[in-house]
Length: 231
Length: 336
Image (tube, rainbow over all chains, first blue to last red; front, side, top):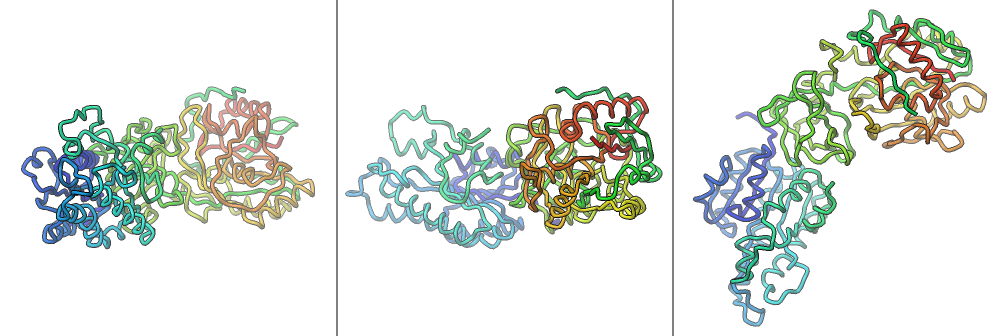
């Protein structure tokens, strides 16, 4: 097998929204990209060239399949933990939220990113790579109905901060991309018009600059702030 | 001040001269302009003068690369503190100017499976030089040693081996392009200086790529002025000797380490100093230099040391007497 230093990324939840837009940009930039999603039939057409692994990040066997796909490529420069679970829609208040739903949100948004990071840390250390965890303003603001999702993202932010302290050779970010016109955002606001929100493609350039130049120190980052500092 | 001139065709040195210290030396001082050979340099200096040289060695900083299927040439300009590099990308061949439409996260593929991840313009405000993170097993230096070649521009029609791009002082690899003012020096020339009582002291300044666009300021460069050199400079000045910088690189390093009163402190780091009418030289009182292209920011630096009148006279005479330009060309001693 030819050894190659071609930059390689793993992006979870790349079936749609921000994950799909970021995967598309990295592929066009010359990266090798491994993606996963629960439904992937459309990705052969939407992401030509990507290595697609179908499954759910909460499933240990699926995570192992992802790690094995990345291991076959021999290197990893970027892990994007993007797959997220919003919880029930419409968003219930904490008084009523089913604990099983909260457990599932935490499994997807906290434990799965941690498990993938653990599994892929050796390759990330070798490359001095980047971990990019997709967070939310709900991690720091108290919005009614966002208790399960917001607390899961707050936990993800703290995992990010601690991992950055433990792995100073890596860049470790929790990025709040801001509101976007995505299916998940629509599920949070069922029946409302969200057409004033930007498309996920508009957030991607700020993420690319962050990944390429490490324009911010490790930790929590707002994409809107990155866009403002652009030249 | 618009220090400028027309460089006539045919005055660009297209290849290394037959002997390094056999190139011509124009000596410009308040007494007028004289013509000599470089191996006579010592005749124009005096016991107690100090000649300061740059010991940075030239990297084989140009490599062939691939940008989305299009062949390009990458010039490695400077290593940054975090391990990223400042690069310039040019179309393959030695003709056209830089590629300016790079994008963050874009991958440039190098030989042997190596790659660069493009970041952002570095410094901000221009699109010729970009930050890039190397994905190179074994590191950039070893990669360049194996796959790189010296940067050359169109006026040098063929590739010359790396030793042609090293000065006799070269010790510490790190310059994207040769600190070329030192190229005419030989062991014999240095021995002659020492024998005459002229001292020689080292600094290090790693040069970036020189291909500035008109009006573009010099980029930041990494430098070091050792303590012993700082002491020699200061004692030379106190005793009334001249401090002769060999090249704009040495001038930039010494002036970056100079206090307002002209005393030099040992130091190291990055310098973005731009010498010119608003920041004249404080410590350098003479200059050995090659002949630089019209409009180059180098000329403003020369004027900051020697005064624009003397520099204009020297350049006019050099054009009239058909001195050769650029890194393989003739030399100039400015003694204001």
